[in-house]
Every structure is written in C-alpha cells, then in structure tokens.
Picture 1: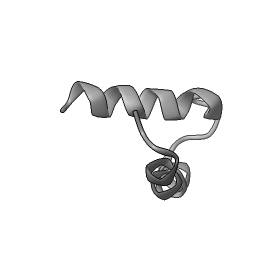
Picture 2 (picture 1 turned 90 degrees about the vertical axis):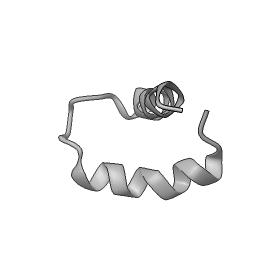
Picture 3 (picture 1 turned 135 degrees about the vertical axis):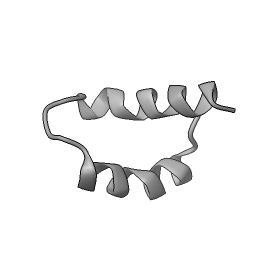
Length: 40
C-alpha cells in the first residue's frame, strides 16, 4: 500500500501522462498500489 507521502510524489507524474477518463481518479491509487504490491 502506498503511503500518503509516496502517493503525493507519484500522483502528479501519473496525472501528467495518463489518458483522461480511463481510470476514475478514486481507483487510480488503489490500482497503482496493487501493481506495486504484485511486483515486490
């Protein structure tokens, strides 16, 4: 799970390059956390 500090660093980078209207912003943090957890 991403901490608030980690998410605060990643969110602007992800928002700058992701297609709009693909993943609801509410679910994006959860999705990124799951990807990172899976690849540990």
